[in-house]
Length: 119
Image (cartoon, rainbow, N blue to C red; front, side, top):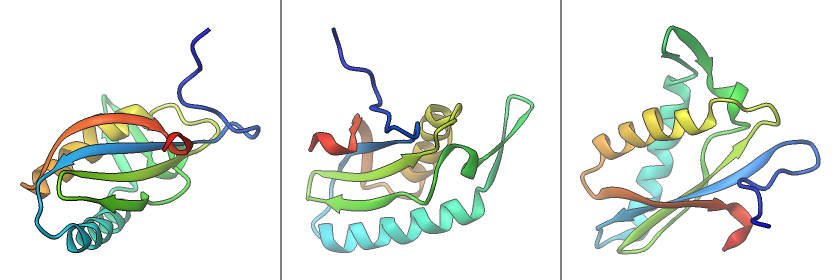
């Protein structure tokens, strides 16, 4: 039987890691810049109007993206989901990633989303 994605904790929360393509000669600097951008993005995107519905970031996520890691070819970060998160996939796929990719020409396609404890 395939395992359920994401893996839910006993309280219903979960943690997913996004892995994206990136092209950078300075991964340490890129990680710092992306962390700052993500923190600012969360502050500026506490609500989002999505198909005539107002969504609240904190309804789906416990905190800002964290654990930013970067190499010359990939960038990853984690998102911790709330127990009753309904719109977390929409936040990621139709809002956060689109804005992130628009802000950084170095960041390419999403490679995969995995449970945080898989790597």
